[in-house]
Structure formats: C-alpha cells, structure tokens
Image 1 (cartoon, rainbow, N blue to C red):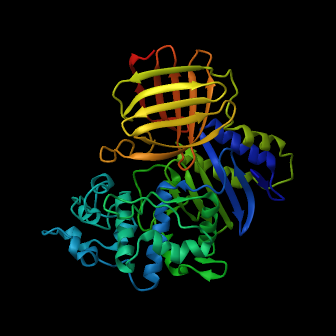
Image 2: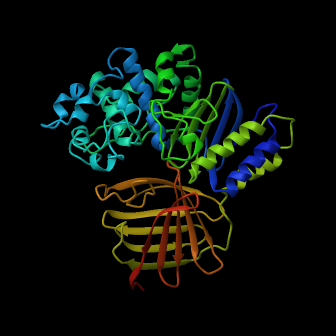
Image 3: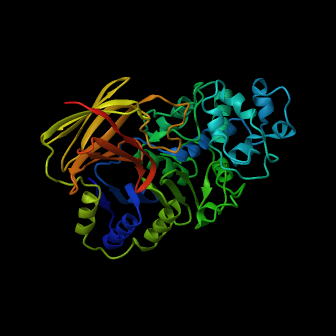
Length: 468
C-alpha cells in the first residue's frame, strides 16, 4: 500500500503539500508522520517503497552518536575523553597544543579545530585515524563550528577502540537487533575504518523505529537502549553554524543532531534524508527523497504539520498523484540494433550497443567486462549491473576511488520528439537519478547524474569509429 492516512488527516492538505513539493523539486520518495507511536501519514512513491535500505548520507551521524552515548552510559567513554590519550599510538611525534586538548566533546559538536571537513584527506589514507590527527588545526578545539564528516569518523573510531568491535557490529547488538532491524551496510574507509559520518543504509521503516526510540527518550518496546541523560545532552545546543542563514541550520548543533527552529531535533542527510523529532507536539517525521533545497524541504514540512489535521476529504487525487509522480512515460517503441565505439571517458566504456523491440537493451563494452541493462517503455525494470565512475554523489569521481561498483536501478526509456532516446535510471539504494540522452544520428550519449533536477555531474560518450 503506497498511501495511508489516519482518521482526522485532511487528504486535501496532504495533496496540496506533495504538489507544492513537486513544483519546487522537493522530490519525495517516502514520507511517514507519527503522532506518538501511531502513524498519521504513510506515503511511498512508486517505484520506491518503505522497506528498501537507502544511503542515509549524514543521517548516519545520529546513529554514531547513539553508539557513543551507549559507551558513555557504560563508562567506556566520556565527553571529556582526550583523543591524545585514547589514540596515543596514532598521534604525530610533535603534537600541537590543540591536538593535546582535543576532546570527544569537540568532535561530537563539530568543533574539532579544523577550518573545514578533512574527509577527503583521510578517507583513502593507509591509516584513517592517524591521518586525521595529522591535519592542521586552524582553531582551538571547542571554539569554532566546522561541519566535519571526518570528525564523526573519529567518533566512530573511538567506539570501535573501546568496544573492540566494528561500529555496525556494536550497534547491531545494542540497537539494531532491539529495533528489529537487520544488520545494515555501512561503508568503510580504505583501511577498514567505518566512515561513521556517512555510508549507513537503512529503510524508511527502519528510520521510523529509530525515531520512535528517540522520541521515547531512549526506550523502545519497553527496553532501554541509551540513557535519557545522554539523549538530552546530545540534543542540546553545544555549537552554532553562524555561516548558514537557514533557520533550521542556525538553531544550534548538539552531538551529531541538529536542533529544529520550531523545537525538537533531527538527524539529516544530504539531498533530503530526514528523521525529525518534535517532543512538544509528539510528532516524528521520516522523509527520504531527492532534494536540492533542504531548507525549503523543512519549511514545507512545517506547513504540512500545521495543516494536515482537519475534516476528512477525498483522497483520490492524492492517490493518483502518488502513483504517477515518477511514472515512466509510454512512447513509440525502439526497434533497431546500433553499435558504435566511444572515445576515452570517465566510465571506461569502450563500445555501446543499443538494441531491442519493445524493451531497450543497452550493452556496454568495458575494460572490466560486458555490462547490460534493460529499460522498459511505460514501465520501470529493475536491473543490477556493475560499472565504474557513474555513481552520482557528493564525492563523485574522487580520484582515489576508481572502483567498479554495483548499481541497482529502475530503468525506463522514451522516444523524444527530436529523435533522441531518453533513458532514466532511478537508483534503488541511493537518492540519485541518471538521465541518458542517446542521439542515434550522432551515436552520442549525454549522461546527466542528478538529484531531482540538480545536475551533480555530466559526461559524454562520444563516438570514434562507427561499426557496421
């Protein structure tokens, strides 16, 4: 079921909300709103659902904070824990005064002393933790906010050091299994250190359970997960991002949680992933999507919370909008078989073959094997294939990556009026979309890697010698 509205929820107000979101490129995949433990709104926009794990980006940070909190509850860590003592074997020979003073509190509150995030300098190092402590500090730790996924990575490393377990394993035992969540994927750095600040994959339903636990002050189904004292500390203001003018990003920052402008707190991840908790009104909001403007995303959510209660109204228009928002367009079918070679490119694709009758097959010849995916006409077809350097992300084409990655995409195509073929690839496990414009006359393919309508990156497959 793609839509559920509780009694007392005004479908017209919800429909107005989703249409305003769509008009502003706030592309929702799933939305769940709870009042206490009771679901008020559940929406999933096909081909997406509530059960598929998705990359949470920086919403991962709030889970790392929970792990730190469990360790603090057990006396394994403290906000006052000094990094130079916990990681004495990872320190440079000549420690700066700032490094000597650096505490876990400073990392949790994004006040590590660095001027900016240094993740790109440590993720592909032979020793992630040592590389972090070798980075130059601009400020005295604990004095200046600088949002840093790298700092969260060291928070995760602290948990791993005192528990002797991988972060995901520790949280599986102490959090996930108690919430009824299967052990998730969590990306790692080159040396096996958990990324901690990003890379966690969970579903919309998983996030609901996490949000309910947070709303219940650390308790889920009657079992204490993390102390109320720690959550109160983690969701209190410890630092402030003075350079961000958006109300919900200048309300304050706790321990890997943002404070909301209208009360409560949230974990959030790039491109619109949200877990928002409002204790005063007893609401929890979970949203996954493809969003460029997160400030507007939150603003529209507030508007929904203000308007969603009221007299019952017809929901047929809302149901139709949800079912058709991402629907693949039916067009004239492709019926041909074309092959051509392409010039050197980022994806290391050498040849392309496009063939089919009603379904469109795209076969890519690469240095790492032949890859193929199939596109529906008027419908999406789920494909799994491996390719290099065509994943849209914040760190797109990091020169140190250069890896062949598995892609799970919903694929569809349509014939455009100008004779080109538009192939849409909707990533199943990330919030990204690809649009391939295939010019049959020129044997050229323009590839746009997007979030919503925001192009993250673009490259072309340009022909060399056409093959008969």
